[in-house]
Length: 460
Ligand code: BES
Ligand code: ZN
Picture 1: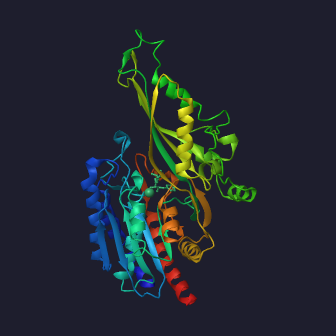
Picture 2 (picture 1 turned 180 degrees about the vertical axis):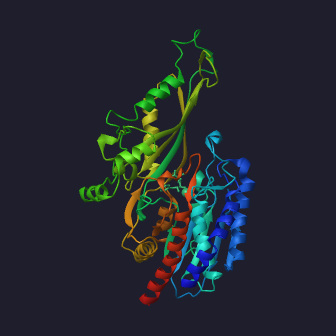
Picture 3 (picture 1 turned 120 degrees about the horizontal axis):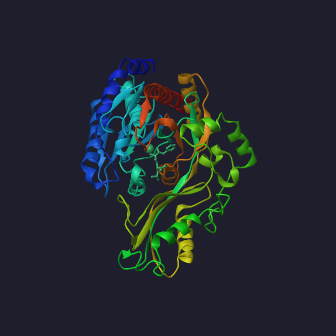
């Protein structure tokens, strides 16, 4: 392993230059205009893997963007690690808020700025370069490795589960590892112990058969925006509790022990608030912020439209109003069930003056991971050796649907070993990734593979 660590250290600057090349490719999965660029990013990664001596790597076609499948078996008696990552990125909008262009990576104040620098190209790249450090450093990989790298994570991973099910045998592994989450804080290494799930819908209300003059018709013809605004406002009560009937049924909220564990983590409410520029928060019945953003269900409107949005005033009674609504879910809540509950609720409250169109866009199940499993302990050892501190286990509010799919389709747990920070502005303008964390992540992964490989040998 020392040779791999040395190689990584000596080639670090080169790794950053290569990562910049990958970040220049605008692989925005949700926008069909970029589908060739998404493919180009996938081809770039396959070429890189093969160039460093990874035994086998290929692009697999799906009905959407291609999935990369790669495999390097050293010795069938060694444990096998399945690495997952995504090479697609979120759209960069609003462009005018970027200090430098999203697909022209630059280093500023020790961080690499570009869309995807943290989520997830930069974090995925730590795995690719950890592998290279072994192979090119002249040391055999200490574990067998399989890689599953998709290009649709940011648009709902719709083709991934069928792919995993169809390739379950090929993907067989002892554990999965993902670096696509955040550290608890810059000086608090952490392993993510749970992620929220997701249900995402789009609703549209239609009233009259065309936009109308609001003076001629206003007062009698129902305004779909007025109706939508009221329905949305009523989705939370005065305690900021979601009002959809049955929404919390079965939801495993934190036990008193878990609440105490969460409260013991070094979380600073006022620093957290000032980092996002708010002076007050509103949580469900006033629960602590950390609980509310990591282990509690939510409902948020992600976008809303209708009527006139241009400059100045236009007197219009709009024909349509629409909204995109996402719900973050905790263990015990099922995305399809939650979507049906919302659908039934909306159908029961929408008045006869408008018609409702309801679409289920995508979802993902919540997960809790087993923190006692050997791979978790190997990750903890590796991170402590790298950063000098034992990592904490903490739940996070984001979603990575594949984690639940791995458990169900492959029967394996996932180690969520992330090196992002919430302040990295993922999905926002000026996304960045600190090079110190890139370095720590790379070293932790090199050490993790070694530690886990040795554990596997001892078990035999
Ligand atoms: N990397 C994030 C997930 C994440 C971010 C987990 C921060 C923990 C902390 C991932 O790329 C992402 O954004 N996922 C989507 C999933 C959704 C489209 C189903 C999310 O959480 O919104
Ligand atoms: Zn991600």
